[in-house]
Image (tube, rainbow over all chains, first blue to last red; front, side):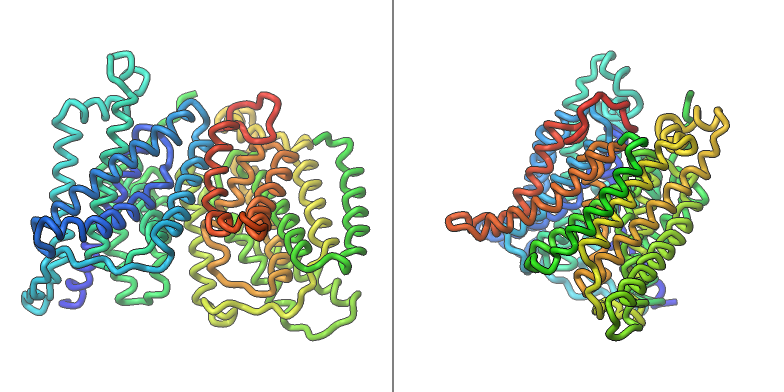
Length: 301
Length: 317
């Protein structure tokens, strides 16, 4: 039982990170109805932004420290938000009237570009992410051990999820996002500037991906330009699992994938780990084709 | 492609690939290897075009079917030692067909449960199946697991690659242009309307998956006996993406365009590699794939309907 709970905690930490990435996929899908394949690479760039920022911040603020870590994370999120807006502006916006598959291929092109350019600029060899958080002693609680990083990951994720919920439900731009997602043409007719809403969505999603990148790098400190591929795919699976376009669904899907993956590698076999996300997805798709929390779309003739 | 000329095309292409293969011995190994890759890409892209282009079912797991064919045929031919030419080619053909059949069975297994899904959901589930095939191969010690599998024979030659490429093009073109095959296009254009007209959409979708997977399996067999070394990682999701890019760049449901883009996208990275060898162009070596990805983005931005689509095609889904 103790071991099970322990695995559950590890899974929750992994799942939280996947949930943060999945939110970016699902928000973009909700509004533009296309899969932003480059999202996993924005996650990678978030980690690299932190890697290059940390020494600069260390000159001003003491590192490792909580304040310093927050500054590093904040600036990385801002950098990636800007990057997300740029990617949307130059690669996706010119194709908005085109079939979704065309945009999908462009997104794949952007993804490849970020990966290869990353290998060229940062080098292909893994880099050690600097310690930006003070290493607290591992907390023991009735046989369970909490790594301070895991607690940070889960706490930051919960905070970001609540912040996102606030933005989407309580602010004007959030209302506009929901309107565009519901019906882009009608929203435009009502005076919503869809271009700004879409840019904002990309900024928001990319900032969450950057936060996920930093959290990932804190937990698994070896970062490399291809690190975004697998978490990216798994997060996308998580988004589809929860019902793509649905924000709570993406968070739920991320946690389910993270926990299942950790449990399977703990109890069954770690070599099958990468297939688990897909096996869970296929099983759920067979029973509920629109995802766990997704609404069934009725096709009108 | 006009169906009336399809049979002539098939015979001509088979004869031509036989003629070219007579000179195979005089071509040095690198251009020969690239030619094999071109033939294999054509088979993969044209067969995927039946699923993605004509039938409109977005599959992202084509490399998984290729892996099934590659491993099956390699395991079969590895049982044999040195053989004379006739026997070797006979066994090679049998192994290729067996690989194709194994992949077709995998296509059936993927096709049936995923039929309720559409669009992006189908895409992600086929991607998942491709990844699952890869992970299973990684864990199968009988075929070397993650260490990879050596293939004993290098039986792939120009005749088999381009012969099978011609057969693939013929089968897909003849199928789509037949009375029966109009159903594929009907499913692509409007599934609900097709169903209302009495078309068994389920059957058409499974058929497209099975036939597409069969040829992907054959391409896998050809690939196995040309590289002579298989690793599960070589059939990952990026590999599937490469073939999808060929189909979309060629113009979905446009066989000639897809063939041209398969040739172009196979030659492009190789061409950049050759350019990098030229004096003063060494910088291309490091930035080869960056250039490739940028070209991909620019091509999609400037010719979103596909590189070789000239007539106004109905808007794909």
